[in-house]
Image 1 (cartoon, rainbow, N blue to C red):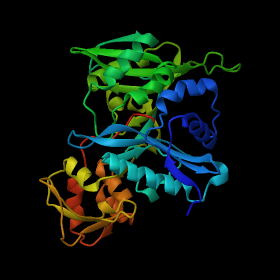
Image 2: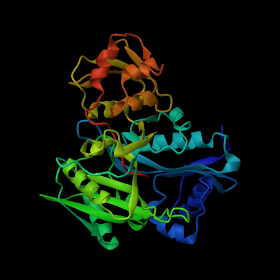
Image 3: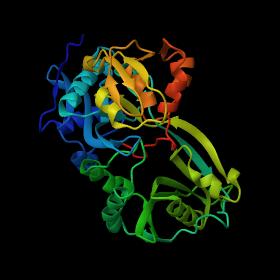
Image 4: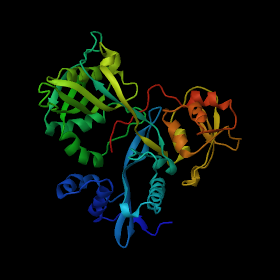
Length: 398
């Protein structure tokens, strides 16, 4: 048990809580930093732990929507600021904050909660599981194939133009599973930092603007290597289709005085390598977890997504943090419903989250000991229900 008081953050306490978060993440909060971040750090949806009248822990989120297989977008909490003061760690404060936050999410009607994990050993015990992954690409001496989609025109925007155009463009294309809406509270900071510190290029197709890329260059020349080209880093790239994607990459590959392009956080299955004359010119330099997911309302979440063809499977979920989720669910392509039938598969909420967007196969998790199998015949059926044709991906930092 923790001796700290856990309560919602009050209006007027935002900066002191943000400074606490900064210290816990080894960052300094100046007046300039706070001026940029104040609009993205409202008191609403934030909880703090207080000891002796001082904040010693904080956990917050903002309201968004998460795209799930089948095209629906579910009410979601994007957890964007969790920290505990160094002299108060390992006293149960984080556990109390996360429990209070999940209960609040349930009261608000959030079906899921999502986050990007700074430490991957923390969030599994709160029911979060890795739901999407991303890859880092390094592109050198590359050109697109002659038969690659031609693409359209690409133009550079001024910072003022980009702050208006990019949010509208992101909201335009259909969201793939794992992507989230970017609300005003997210853009309030991103317009200044994400857009303000990057070059912005927009692709225009037959029906108008349909893709954008944010990038910046870094001079890596040294005394011994004075002619080394700059490194171009892609920070944010979204395109409505492969045609727009090819057009944006064709533009990037033609930027003068660049020796290599680095593109972290790209989706698995990114088609870039398939449109290059030399696929090896785009090397995968890293593979990482991306979005972590927590099902806040298991029945609503299971019923909202679509499933592949196959016979239903009975899954038992045990959720000590949100007991209303505990139960047995008959999951099939026609419907999802609670049932009293004997379970064929048993799992914890974090494992169900790993399956939910289609990133992991039930049989693979069962082989790793993460799923308790009561009926081995259920695994092949489950493997046909959960996968999706396009790997899930978030693509939004928060």
